Amino acid sequence: MSHIVEKWKVFCEWQRRPSHIPQMAEQHHRCYTCGQEYQGNYCPCCGQSARIGRYSFKNALLLFLDVWGMGNRGMFRTLRDLILRPGYLIRDYISGMQMAYFPPFKLLFLLTALLLIVDSGVNLKGENYLASYHEKTVNIDNSHTENSKKKEKTRMEQWNKTADMYIVKFREFRENNPAFFWLSLLFVLSFPLYLFFRKSPNIPDLRYSELLIALVYTWAMQDIYEIVLTFFCVYDDNVSEVTLLLCIIPLKQLSGFKWWRTSLYVILSYLAALALLLAAMLAAIEIIIFLEAM
Image (cartoon, rainbow, N blue to C red; front, side, top):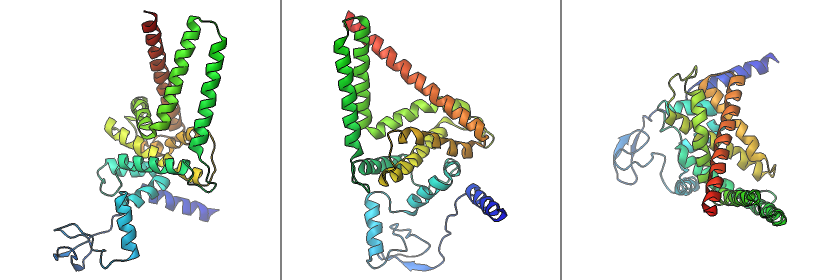
């Protein structure tokens, strides 16, 4: 038991340490592209890596990954740290270590695209979860339509009809524009979270822009878990909602608050964001009903 505790302490110490970046190589090289002689990891004239030499399968793989923006060591370091030390990764990035990690917005869009590919059938069962979700949405919308036809033409019916219309449009928007939808939700959620985490033990002067970057990386972390769960078909309709709770981990590591306090702040922030969205939707419905009555 003491051995496990010691291993855990070593792991926690590794989490808190900033990522180690390899130092500049001391060997002298001659660039295969421009012929420049230099010392270091990259050619100062054209920027080609010193590791690139004669064509090989390894170089071919790196070139293929470059097409998708993943052919650099920062991508793999970022994926690793998002799983093992997400909050400390965010701390390192906002403190200035930006070349060590993959850009947050670019990473989020790449992972969202990969999640859509996995959802569309590229998984162990070959099941198209997007089609299943769309079918359930259509059934729910049809049931709303049938129920509204049975009611009398009252203001409540008109209100329900407008609300159903907004629900349908909301689902269609979320399904057709997942990246933009989640970014919009992040923007709404960022306001209450900033009020709670702008002054914390680790970062007493957290900026709003830094919190926004933290949320983007957090959402990328959740995408990683969703991709793995969906690929191995450990899938449920509530997977996305459950993974939302994972944001407690990076926010706790970043802020330095206790677990209970971080969890409380996250739950209160979600409730506040939900209240803002509901208030906006109710206001929009009332405005439409008012305009139609004129």
